[in-house]
Image (cartoon, rainbow, N blue to C red; front, top):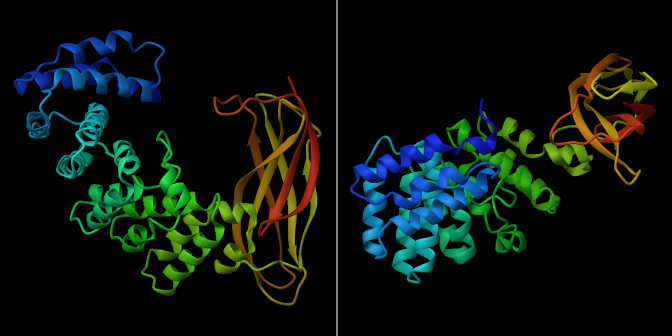
Length: 363
């Protein structure tokens, strides 16, 4: 499997150049881009090809649109070459400076998104005119094409990975509510997953909006709503938000105890840390619990920052106890740098940290 940076590589550029040539379009600047890809991240590669496309394609906006439609007509024009095409469309249609050009750009993005996605290019449209773009995205929610419906949700997320932040969306977190309200019962899992991620994005700063929205959906559910809401509330559950936990049926577990937490006192970077503990319901009523564990990673400045990991969701009968165990790998990964020294591991139930132990991470 290629690294992310390699998804838009020389092969994709060569394919795009062929599509341009077959359509009777110039490909001179586009062909040259892959020669300087080494060391460039995926977004930078896309931007480079986008700029080359703008050079190769006609200066007249109407002729530019005709050229893009020529590319769309070719089945071979698909995959990662689509990303820079969508970006070129967004740049040209917003820089044209007319409502007609703007709307034409949105139409082209709708046509292109089934070939890969136009979610990143939609950010340019949102930054240029958030209200007009959101109105169009709302109309997309009724499309017969699941890719277009997903674009409405995914492209308007607050924290879309690899994408620019749209300050107007950050300042108006309620602005996308009509879009996700229209899609939470979508027949496509592909679309529903985007809706859950969209709502989860809002939980970073707006837990109240997320819980209110999830409650509204649970009041008018279909067979998939429960699963969608659980995925949408995952960050709030890990954070121990009482309203989110209560909405999912996980009340404050006053009668729950965690005992016998057992971990090795030392673990080497590259090895696994094994933990075990006992969770007990000492009360007289059954209790639904979500059990997580968190690792307190030592940062470069010596402070400890906990990251929560999932363990299990259970219903514990009165006086019932369960043994839990987990191995956590400290193998080197690109997204985290390990710092030797004191670390922590905690077990939390329904968002409450209930047992904690220290261990030493060493080379």
